[in-house]
Length: 249
Image (cartoon, rainbow, N blue to C red; front, side, top):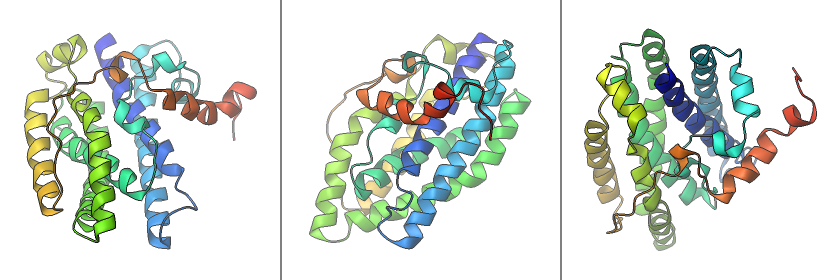
């Protein structure tokens, strides 16, 4: 059960932190439709985080709720990938970060539907409906920005150059994954990565962009080692619960 708890934290923390990042665009979108779209994306991710962290609390069996796990842990206890905590910077960086993550989440949820863990399977089934839209949305924007003006192409390429180093962590694997793969609860990371690379290469090529030629590897986030950005996120995200313990709306 400890492996399942840790895996649920990874998925839940990915959704929670990315949802918060996207929420920062509320009221600041480049056009009204995108302002609304990104706010809805943020709500989708927070909803996924709620389901995953609530289930993680049940699996842990120590009486912690999803809210406790979201708001009352220290930074070293979070297990999200470094990619999702990277700053928004501009619309191009936000969409590229989103695309890399969506291209990973869609095949993951498609495979988790067949998990031997019924509750995880149900969460994946519900989340997949949202994730298919997320990937369509981010893919179209990457193509539009890459194959647009010289300015948009340059910014999109700069976004790839900045974020690519963090993508390998999406397929980080350790003893947690090994145990759950053997139990038939999660899919093999190698299969996921192959599908991810195929989809990413196709969209990036259509966008007339280039993937950097480097093999940098990251796994720090999955081990609780984060960039300085997470600290600022948590300071804002956790303020109310830290200031007023047990606060409820």
